[in-house]
Amino acid sequence: MAVFEFKNVTKFYGANVRAIDDFNLLIPDGEFTLMVGPSGCGKSTALRMIAGLEDISRGELLMDGKIINHVPPQKREAAMVFQSYALYPHLSVYDNMAFPLKIKKQPKDLIDERVRDVAQILGLSELISRMPRELSGGQKQRVALGRAMVREPKVFLFDEPLSNLDAALRAEMRIEIAELHSRLKTNFIYVTHDQVEAVTLGQKIVVLKDGKVQQYATPHELFRRPANTFVAGFIGTPPMNFLKMGLRRADDGYEMITENLHIPLHPTYRPNFDQYKKESIIAGIRPKDLSLRGKTALDKADKRCTIKGRFLLKEVIGDDVLYYFDLSTDATDGKPLIVKANVSLDLDRKQTVDIFIDIKEIYLFDIDSGKTLIQQ
Ligand SMILES: Nc1ncnc2c1ncn2[C@@H]1O[C@H](COP(=O)(O)OP(=O)(O)OP(=O)(O)O)[C@@H](O)[C@H]1O
Ligand SMILES: [Mg+2]
Image (cartoon, rainbow, N blue to C red; front, side, top):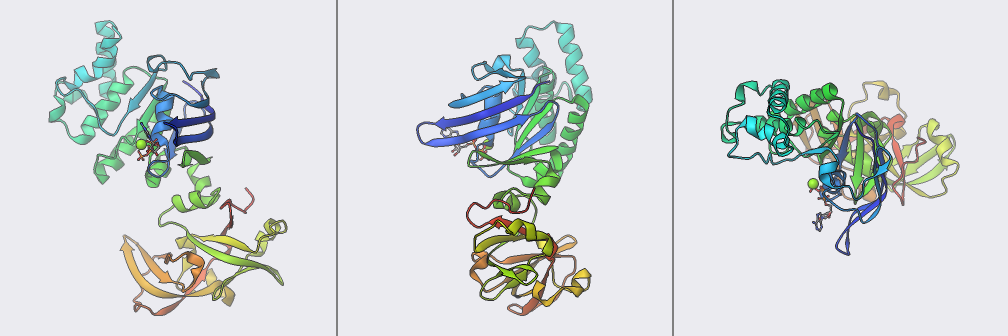
């Protein structure tokens, strides 16, 4: 059981690489916390700091309220599980799992009891005398987990533990790890660059970019109330569409315009703008909030909620169809607009199509900082 707190933590590698930048985060006890972000954003560094494998250039790291910046790894009672299983090839499953207790010189019968218990929990009892080379990838990963569990650590640290496994096995192991967490109720801190993995596993997710915390929230909050354009674009598949638009007052509220687009803002957004003095804005629209047919409630939508796009291509993914459109505007920074629908329409390339926008679902961000303008 442990609460971890980063207070203004910064980490330099050499003089120039700032891997972690003024990091502030409180990770409560017993939670399943996910850290997610693109490659190089500092996830492994943050995790390794908790394990005590990386020194801290500035700031403080606390465990249960005590500063642990200089506490050596052995004293932190953290167990780390990596992408590579790092099993000892010449030791059996049993001996691999017993190893951390043997080096701690624990009594033999206690070791035996712990190893057999853990093997049972992880469904490894039958495989206990096999050698690592006789195991599948998923089984090896389970042994690596078992080796971490026998020590009854205060925190489990996972660094992309499933990325060597194929998609089906990864999904299966995810469920196992989630079950393990609800059983052990120990802190799990899990790093991944895969936002889908993050939202399926985590109770709370830390989104990182360039060594900085972008947002720390539940999966639902990240999706519904992203703090900035980075989080908005990172969480959710396919990613949110962004449009840079001019903003001006209209009779009944506000509207967004570019040379050829005209999108009214829903009246409920009005309170956000009475202080916003800028003339441009970033609008975010999720592909699911766009549609190609006016059959639903959008039928009644005002014409101004319709924009025109030139069809580029479509992609069928299971029950969903993704359509890509060219809006012939600089507003999208040259990116196609993505529409997610569950109908497959036959469209001709370059055909002009009406696209309906559910204007109640538009996200708005500051043009300069990218921060959300929707009140949290
Ligand atoms: N030992 C090191 N020396 C110098 N720079 C390093 C070292 N380790 C990491 N870095 C740099 O620090 C930054 C953060 O690295 P880190 O390994 O924490 O990223 P990450 O988020 O885990 O990335 P990935 O998803 O690729 O594993 C990167 O810019 C990386 O190049
Ligand atoms: Mg990493």
